[in-house]
Length: 84
Ligand SMILES: [Zn+2]
Image (cartoon, rainbow, N blue to C red; front, side, top):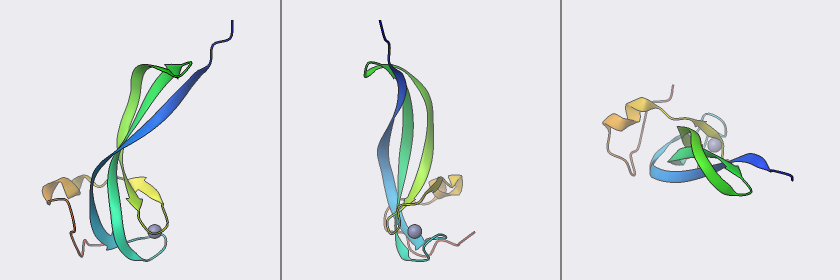
């Protein structure tokens, strides 16, 4: 019997904000998502293994770790976040 183990990632949108991208340089919407990993066998989810938050550039698609300080500001259409 062959068991196929693997992991799967689901991304749940949290919100977005407008900011300059450090990779492509475009000022565009960045999407904040929960990236949730689940271990599964034969596509049956077993247990969650990790979850993290990411920021994904709407221009080039680069995913970066979330910035916790963004929790302090309302999500959606925020313009002019300082670049780090
Ligand atoms: Zn970009």
